[in-house]
Length: 309
Ligand SMILES: Cc1cc2nc3c(=O)[nH]c(=O)nc-3n(C[C@H](O)[C@H](O)[C@H](O)COP(=O)(O)O)c2cc1C
Image (cartoon, rainbow, N blue to C red; front, top):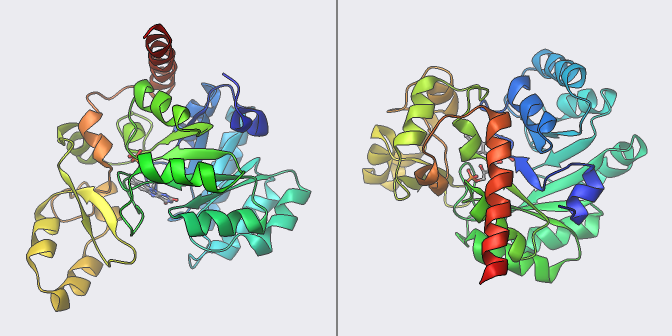
C-alpha cells in the first residue's frame, strides 16, 4: 500500500509502532517492527544519554530499514538527546511536546524527516506553519497523554486532515487491521498503535504490565493528573485513590506514582499503567514481527470487505 507517509519515509506498510516511554525505550521492539516493514519508534524520553546512544547503534546494526525516535522537546534531557540523535543521523524524528521550529533546519540538513505529535487543531496548524514534514494526531482513546479536550481520534483526525495539507499519522484507539482501515478511510496516511505493541515479548515492560493490558476491558482505563495534561491509564488502586481524593490532595498522589514503577518494577496497583482504551481489544502476546504480518492481513481483509459491500 502506498500513501504519502510510506513514500516520505520509505516504509512498506502504513503502520507505526508508537513511541512509549519504557515499553519502546529499547532496541528490540523497534528493530522487529522496522524489519517487518513498519515504522518502529524508540521512546527516548526516559533514557539516559549513553543508553540512548547504544540503542541507536544497535538499531542501526540490526536493521537497514527506516526507524524513528521520539524526543519530548520540553524534557530536561531534550538537548542532549537531540544532539545524540543528530550525531547518529536518525532517519525519522517523531517529536512531541514543544515547538519544532528551532530544530528543523539542522535535522533537515542530514536528511531526517520530522514528524510532530499534536493533539489539537491549533497545534496541528502551528506545526504545519513551522514546516514539519507530517503530523501524528493523537485522539482521546490514546494511552499516555491524550488531548486535554478529550476529542476522539475519529473526530480529531478527520478535522486535522481537513484543516492542514500535511500527511497525517492517526493515533489512539487502534489495535487491529480493521481500526487501521477505518483511520485510513478518514484520510490518515498511516496509523500508529501503542498499547497493542505492549503485548509483545520485545516490549521492555514487566510481565505484570503486559498481563494488565491483556486483562483490561475497553472501559477499564481512566484519566488522571492535571486537567491540562491528563494521562490515560488502566484503573488500579492508585487511580481509585486519586479519583476519590480532594483536588488539594491530588497533586501529591499524582507525583508519588510513576510509570517506571509499573513498567520496570511491575507494581501495577500503585504505579501508572499507561494504556489506551484499545487495551480492551488486545487478547494475546505475539512477537512484534508476527503482529505486523497479522495487522497487514487484517488490513487487507478490511479493505476487501469494504470493497465487497
Ligand atoms: C505506556 C505508554 C507510554 C507512552 N509514552 C509516550 C512517550 O514517551 N512519548 C510520546 O510521544 N507518546 C507516548 N505515548 C503515546 C503513544 O505514542 C501513542 O500516542 C498512544 O499509545 C496511541 O494510543 P493507543 O495506545 O491506543 O494505541 C505513550 C503511550 C503509552 C501507552
